[in-house]
Length: 194
Length: 212
Image (cartoon, each protein chain N blue to C red):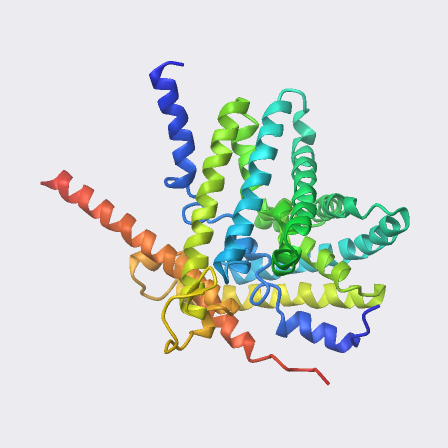
């Protein structure tokens, strides 16, 4: 069993090894939904929720698979768990807030193929986290994803107003900004190690 | 086979490599593209595994496209894809432990590579097996090329070597930043910039010719 402290896992997944900027997970929604601050926050909320639920379920699933000696089914069963969680969240949001549902549009079902969610489930298995550690890890990762998304959307709202060469508009510029952001996040290395 | 249809098949194949290159034009499959391209070896391993999964699952999806009800098609595709990913996962572990360690969880993450699901949904579910395989091979090769472009630049600048062979001699000071995550963003951004510059120049030329 991994014995890293909860606080360290949280800081590590939130800042030091930020999912988007250091591990390169969830880049598609990161580039796709980060146009507007408002949408970014909501998308982040949805991802945090999906991540928490699916990582709890994935933990249970893994215990079951290990007991049955059927670890080769891990990838398939994780994907099924995540897909059904996303379906649940989708129905919930559609019922509670149709406006948000429309704003998230295609990106809501795409959380299924958001590698961040599967990535968190895989990482917690590989690193042998206990249940509590897994929950803290997925919470930190989800918040880290939201943080990156929100910062990025703030910058992009400003970028829309600035004068950039035509060729650099869109994804190319967004990637450059992401590179600089990722450099900034490297400054967190070493934080919370004691 | 008549000439025009074989021509069209060639078109399907070439589409993925150039005109609809999954990484540079469609901007799909970003995560593995950025994450594992800090060396050429990893890029090749990732490219080939993704291509294998892409081709096999496109083939299977095209085979079952008339049997699967529309409502459950996405779930079926994902199951098919994850089956092949599991095979690749065990294959790599059997073939080379260092590569397995370097790619780590990113092998499992081939499942959620949007290119594969995208091709299954957009092409294989509507076309014959033969054409779907052609399309998948084209897309796979295009993906490999893109990974090599990124991995080549990053390894060359980041450690001064290519496939582990030193290129620049002992006096080269490596730009470590290119091996770090931010280097991945910069390199891909730069490549996209090059491509959009080319596109813009082409459009400008076309406009000039029209007005002349």
